Length: 275
Image: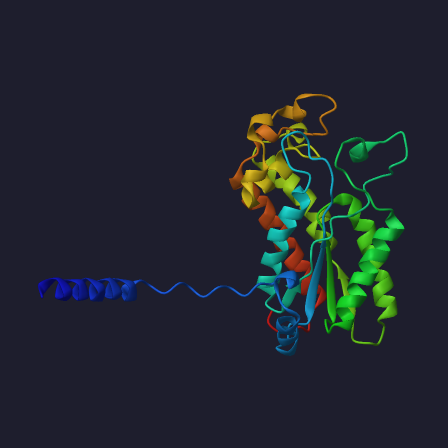
């Protein structure tokens, strides 16, 4: 008779141990609309979330040590942080097809490297306008346009201008947040210079800036065994010294982008609540 009693006692004790486990923390609701159902998006709209962020990245070569989607992974981090800080914004899927040059020979710039995809400027602008109008039709009233690459900036501004002209007196508005890239690029150079890094070490593409940011947001996508000053060869596609990159630097550089974007958004929406 003792064995059934002991077995019952063991089961009760096991249940008590399970009951004593702390409850899992509640999952933070997603802000990317492709992680939400249409009804969840509708409910967020009804609750006052009327701003949508469209981020544009770039499918381009990033030297021998970084994946070609570097801009996308950085934007997934920064746009989520921006949306959560604003508190009334969601994020559209990152747009990775952007102007990168021409596929006509002779190939130049990023297009000379395998894996780069380009979109003509007019098609890029048209893509942005159609995406924004789609989201406006779904109930969003403010569309924020942010680009993580220099070649995106003119098209983003042109799209915002077109949208604002089309939406005049309708309650819709497009905001081109150029400070995310242009101001931040200057601020980042100043910051790194204050730490003693010369401009040739900082570089301008796939160097210590891009590499530091990716080391922070997704280090598994950096091929550490391929890190070399200027990519290790004249035709590497790298400007600068990615061997000086660190995740700690990346955290600071990404924060500069987020802070500049938030400041410009807030300045552009002075009457909005919650800021």
